[in-house]
Length: 235
Image 1 (cartoon, one colour):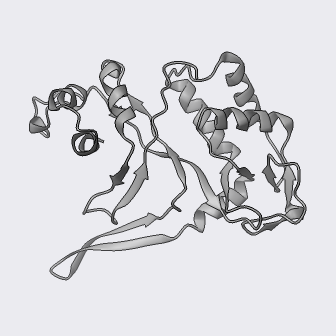
Image 2: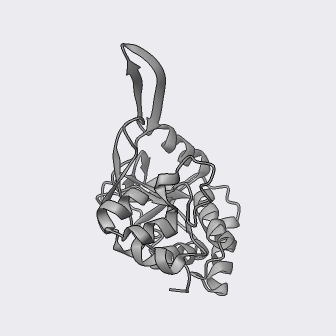
């Protein structure tokens, strides 16, 4: 993220040092804690093929429940109290169905991933309302399909695995294994900068380009399109 600000957003060096601290002191004992923390990315949805649309964005109740709880944990005001109650109730409910659930009311002749119309149903009104809240807040992209947990786990297990050895003089010191995600997959990452939010938020809003994720010592390069969603006030 620091490199992104330096090369893409062209953030002034003084602002970067205020947010991330002086890079010249990295690894030294006199280096204080950074004023901004970037938390790991969380998978929100994956594209799955469909015979009637280019694709659906697949997700699961456990994913959405974790997303909402994380947003609440960070003290965000992006949701009203009524919306938060709706989300927690809908995503916290237990379900016994193993069918795919969609917001659309018509499932005739529909095929999503490896599931056909008899294995697809319209979700409840409570779930439809809750998912629409996330879509309105730009936390989900339509069209959305909910996978049962077992099917979701299977979908993740099917993601391609890329392996790359770190070779030095023909000797493999380390082996890197990573699962690759389709181009339109969505992740959510939280940025905490309570002491310098007035500096960080405008810089995040500048990032409109693809940002490299990964470095030479990892499995390889990938790119993400960041979209900043302010969580300091209800949208």
